[in-house]
Image (cartoon, rainbow, N blue to C red; front, top):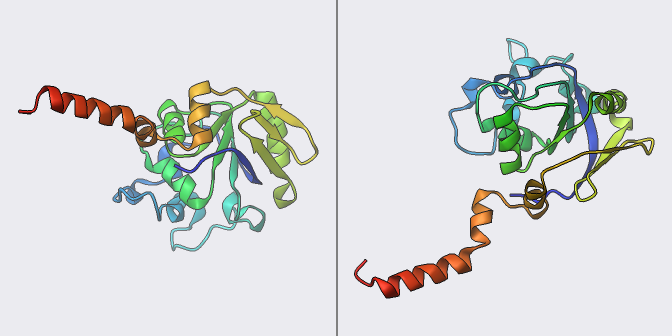
Length: 201
């Protein structure tokens, strides 16, 4: 998993509450178990018209936000079904961070396991960040995970809380497999000892 230390980029505003995982990545994109290629399906039902043409009114299709790396979203982002494809699609598109007041629990956990940083902030701080995001490409946000800070284009700072273990994993790029591999020497030593004690196994 790619490490997350600092991130600076354009933040796209998603002014919708209860954005569920089906909206993030529609079900017809769930036929693959690969983590790549899903960016084209991110918010597909909002990004494209019925004939496949881009919807110019959707935020990610606007010139200022085409290279967004951060989403600022309204309450309860990522609710609904437990599809891991949702953070995969965000990552494949280039989104590394989602900021909201609240998240669907399963989506929130899946983000940490796939390199996307979900940040919870207060409603008051979210409004400040929406103000920044609404200004387009001229207003970038800077996120420092080590300091647990979001810095706005005018120098304002929003502090955020995060579980210490999850922070450690994100800073070091450790998903579940990575956490296991950190202990590979101990696992190997145990296997050797077990083999010596029970050679018939």
